[in-house]
Length: 210
Image 1 (tube, rainbow, N blue to C red):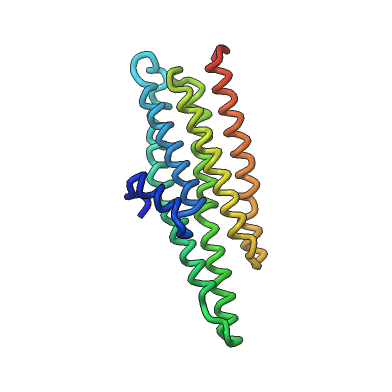
Image 2: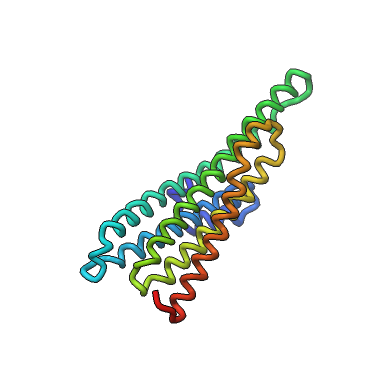
């Protein structure tokens, strides 16, 4: 599983001629890195100087740490869901009954495959919210790391959006489509928010008052 792989091994697989892992899994790893960066930034925002923010810092730290394994699970889920879709498309369709079974299975697998990227968009939004809060009082020496976390979350949301879009492109069930479309719009809002946070942090780094 991706969560147990060494970095080089994952990148070698990502660069190979195999269809998995792909963009969805790569996006989930971006999210894991973003959460880890926020955890690091929170760890450096402790001690007497930040005592008044100790409770907030502890909450952000715990939340960021929880997001790391959650993101890694999404990376694995994305890879697994691709194989489920591929298996569905590989079903025979020589008879009417086989064709109906194949169509139904494909549609079900596409709907299931949309879940990891949908959840990835949500997770990216959590990273953004934590970063927005932490940037308001963090140790100034880790502002760039919070900015990097925002950029990682932006990449995760963008990857989640495009992966979601490719999975729902062939969905026929209108109810399922209606349920998934808000995640596409939410990804856009998260991407914009990440860009705004990154710009705000660059502004702070370049000399404005906090």
